[in-house]
Length: 222
Image (spheres, rainbow, N blue to C red):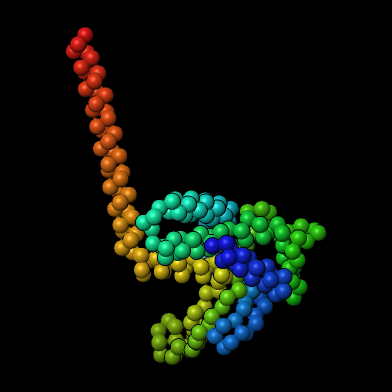
């Protein structure tokens, strides 16, 4: 988990301090580095206010860390499941760091200038309002739709358009693996939790009945 966070932050800081905003470098015909930033969630999606999203990231990261700590105390958890939860946690933390700190520790100059780490004049925004750095772009293939097709005819289409980062990849791949290989285990965990809650409820009801019977017995003795 720590390794993923370190790699994610190292790549982001390198891109931020060596690429101007919007700069693109072709690694292969289907893989490029393209520096962009976004205010939203994974793959540039936006949801609600920036501050609320940052707070949500922090709360989710803390909840995942607590859940991971709980799993570490159990011997019946598959190692693969633990790895997936750890990678999801790493992904959440990686982007949370951007949101919390990047607006304070980086400036945002006009291209073609590149950003400076710890600029003397301060960052480009306030704490908790930083933008997430994305750079991984995989335009695997592209084509023009035929003119006769309704609505999209003549448009240029690129497959796979989202631009993301290492944290996004860690989170999304781990969720996909969980769904693909651990759906049954997740269902078992849910049913076990429900069974424990039902047992606790029955136990509480029995305790209440015992207290009530004891009080009734005392009243009858008097």
